[in-house]
Length: 325
Image (cartoon, rainbow, N blue to C red; front, top):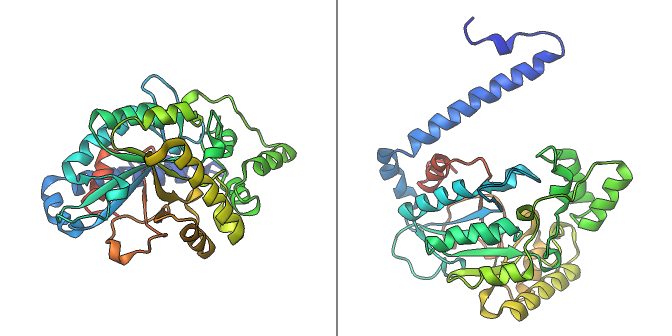
């Protein structure tokens, strides 16, 4: 049968061939659907679904034009692709600072852009692309992991490009996402790690972050002190962490530091909600969800749409006009 070559059942290789064939078909269907759903007629119809709503986008790293991939590849979008996303965003929604997302309401859908982890590529190349278009954004930084830090997930994924799910789950839920503990466990388990990552895939320096904040509309928020999984921590520990991070950011960057928090790994808990309120934050962001009305969500559990490296302009556009969640 035409097109059935990859589905030929032949012992151990059959599952791999079937999986690749199915994934390829799924990818083609997804691409065609995204293109169709982001066309002008569909956009006009579906945009009514998002009038008066809010959307917060979560980006992570940005790969400079001349650089090759490193770390956990799904977290790093190419600079050119990031620029294309920004150009499209401006045509479909009102892009506003995160701190102003809920102020005023002219009926237009409003979008805020965030950059998690303060990767050097995002803080440098990413912010320059934003500044070229006079677009605001908030960088969420963990002060204890600044100055060229290689995050444990990138160290474990480098060379493969993707972190094994079993490794990720153990690191997040047993080791609480704590960098030192994860690295110690990896050494004891004989797991290969690499800290030989290019500058863009490391955290920015304090100086780089300060330079990025010189641009109008660029602000910084807390991503905790050291990027542990707050969902696994006790209330008192979360309060100390959240207060320490907020105090450091305000002391370092003044009014460029806003009282918003992004949960490390997007994971949160009831204790985290109480801790952040106690530490004088005004809102906190998870990973997951999309368009929402402010009145329908909790201040310390705001949804955010994660934008992976492979999300096309058509795919993002489809989500912006409300066709896809």
